[in-house]
Image 1 (tube, rainbow, N blue to C red):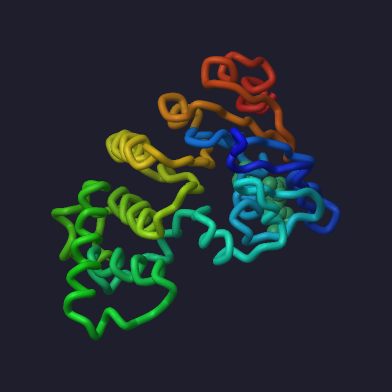
Image 2: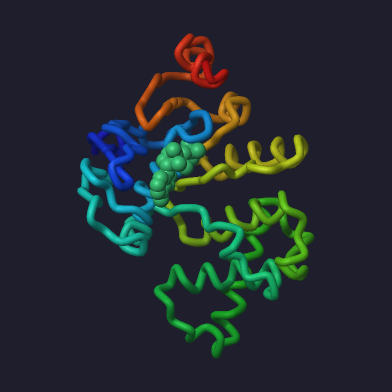
Length: 247
Ligand code: ADP
């Protein structure tokens, strides 16, 4: 078993000649929380979409657990245990919070709808869903309509539905974007909790969010890797400071 669970080699994405991600090689250590950060336009979202297979690279390779996953579809990599957080748009607003997690658990079973017809299976799914809701601090919202959840709680639900897929590695796209300070603290604590025994790659704009969370941080700027290291090292790096200040 190698030390790194996810590796990119020379990952490059061009949009009609514009290089959004340029020759990015990174290694994510098994069991770590790895941050991929950078100022606006750095290529974070493009990188995330390449890693989660929603975009195909122009050049380069992605390896997960020693296997070349470059040409694979999102569902295939999810089956290998590499799961992206669902977007809020994937939360079903008219279903309850509990039902949303139940649907995700059902999806993990491979799309069979048998459990709708079996009381005992339904109970087993609900028990597991309640455990996951407890993990993310949403027990008291279980019967609420997902559409009525406050924004920060929706992001927690998004993490619960991701956990329902039993990931070995989670890819989280700006889990604290647009949140109040209080919600940010809650989500940071939550990511810390759910990362135990897993690997997490977190795409984030906010340096502060990754400071208490990430073991290793890769800084992107203008599509390329600018710096890599722990928070203390990258936050002192003059190139990183200049990139964030836009100088
Ligand atoms: P970040 O997430 O770090 O803000 P993005 O990955 O969204 O950066 O964008 C990186 C660069 O690639 C930006 O200059 C953006 O305008 C460009 N870009 C992203 N997606 C596309 C696209 N589909 N077509 C053309 N240019 C794109």
